[in-house]
Length: 265
Image 1 (cartoon, rainbow, N blue to C red):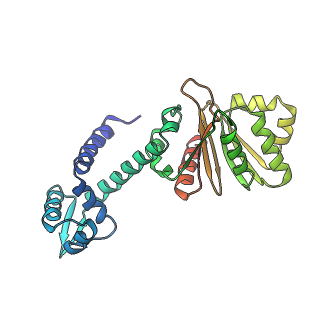
Image 2: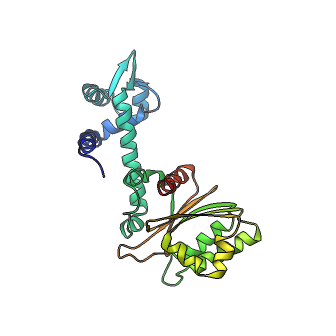
Image 3: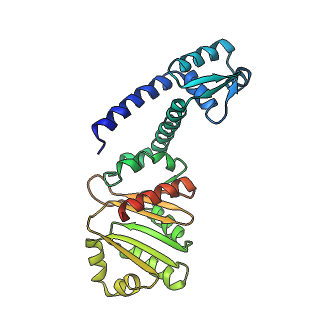
């Protein structure tokens, strides 16, 4: 939970960001000089606006200590840089949520830590895949195809699924999968133990490292050297294997690793 002091600071920052976002010129000016200072001519060329409009926006930003002028160049102050960084995160978060709106709106996010939810923007390039009424296995088949090409996997596994286990065992036995880290609750671990086949070929496999947590969780997250994937539970508590987010970029994998580390810590 966010403490009162932090909430006060966040409220102030939100007001500052809101002030910036209510003016497209103020927003564009901060973004324009985020990476490199610019003079008036350069800003005019980038923003395609007259000098008077640009100078008015710059004066507004200078007045609240977000921009300063050095020689003929305009640059962000330290406050301006921090605010713009968070503004970019906010925009990217909004884009990420909007891009996969159905996925995020229909599922239970309560087991994703608050600080990791705030970094949803790292999933902005993730692909949202949904099964259809005519083919309910689209998402699952996409997932199996992905893990079949992985040499190493780390999986936050919240369900007992014989279908998933059988595929994992095949990939382990064929030598495709060289290392598998499974993070499971005590309940799921005990269920796997009761099945002699899965106990022998999965839990007792030398390529498999099992980490058991005392708490149940509602996140099915897979992390590999090349991709991450995420499936969740409906808000009524049932697991949903018909919708999946998949990403192969470094930012998304970084997000996934942070989530995994939060369960291992």
